[in-house]
Amino acid sequence: MTRTRSLSRRTILAGSVLGGLAAGSVLGGLAAAMAAGPALAQGTAPAATPVKARIGVIPILGAAPVFVADREGWLKAAGIEATFTTFESGPNMIAALASGTIDIYVAGVAPLVVARSRGVDVRVVAATAVEEMTFVATAKLARHFEPGVTPAEAFRRYRAAAGSPARLATQPAGSVPNTTLQHWLWEVGKVDKADVTIVPMGIDATQQAVQVGAVEGATVREPAVAIVRGRDPGIRLVALGGEMFPGQPGTVVAATAAFLDKNPAQAQALVDAVVRAVRLIQEDPARAAPPIEAALGKGIVDSATIRAALASPASKFVADPRSIVTATAAMQRYQVTLGTLDRELPLDGLFEPRYFVRATATQ
View 1: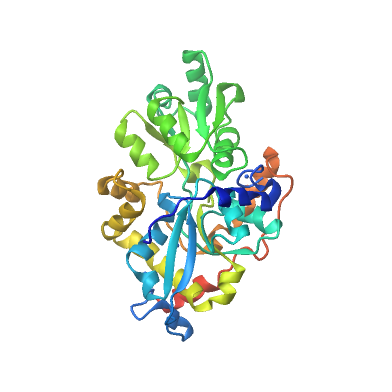
View 2: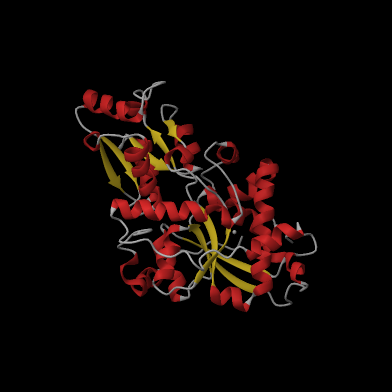
């Protein structure tokens, strides 16, 4: 994978292009794909001059198919010269799309809905993972989640014992993690709001807060789940994504209309590679682990942790973008209920499944 570039201040400032997007957080606030090259699915050989694809990505396990496709050399073989920029949040990445800084977006689907409503022509061409968000509890809270004890009772018991509500870390209001957490608390667990305090913070800060015991629980994705549990066996995985929000839409691969229209063969090759990578992760995780470690580990996360994360019940890789349409609409409706979204926004034109359909027909 081409050397990761840092997000520049200029790119961050490009958030002003979308006005209130960052204020609304995430919703209110990415092997030849065939050995001969995926572009052949359209009867076109890879271009003699590689097509540059500037890819924005949040470094989470849900983005693993893109990392595998790149590290296995499938993107390069298809005539795609990929460069990667890491982001902390969806809104900043949307700002980069709007400013023309990146062509491909690899992160949660939620910000894309808002972006399209504000004139950014971007389309989801593949999914990568679903039901990524989980809830973990530190030892002080986890001991109250005994067999047969409901979430409401566990949080009530914690407050009675500690004399204060349980502090739960998640991303800002309107984000998928925040929405998922609130849905689990209020709709699934029927938790008394007096028994918990939701503490908004960034992804890295959330992981750190759990590790040092600054909070009693948090919403985290893999490989963070494997990391925190590996470092502190007292931390428990209390709820999986499907329990928190059934069908929870996760990471997707989206591209600007300009990139898709200008580079149809490479756009198809990209999706071909993602589909192939998802299959490799599902069927041969041992082979998939090294490229994922190279992309995510940076000398900190070892292969054993990556393998544990891939085997985790919190990891569900899918490539079909059609599989998350219904859940995306359901999440919007709940965000309106929470007041983090003023109204439901149309999904028309956001999902473009034809690349996935062609990819599965040729592999």
